[in-house]
Length: 116
Image (cartoon, rainbow, N blue to C red; front, side, top):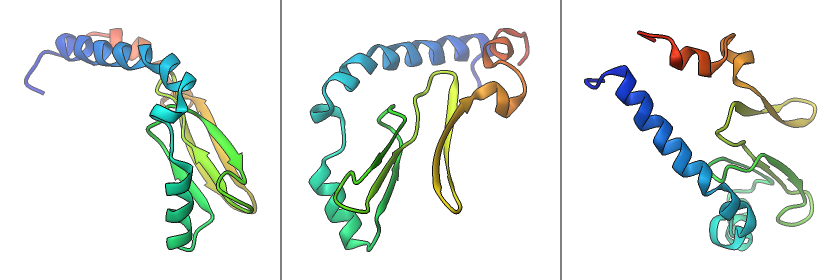
């Protein structure tokens, strides 16, 4: 917080760009960057669960029977201009929405405004 906002924004943008440049590699080779199915299945069994909710892999996905019958994998979304969340009620919903619906303004506009 001791750095000027303009410098913090540039650092953040550089980190985001570097990460987004890896997305095609991540999406192409899930064996290197994805979940290990056998580990996930064991984790669910050991904890008497059938739903795995995770982030970090930048892939928004709902996959039923992912680790065996009656299991569900919910991957929370990409960094881009969306946010995602899981809503559990009568059914399980993996939802992705534009960030502006959350904050009411475009994040690009707020970054470009002075003293934001």
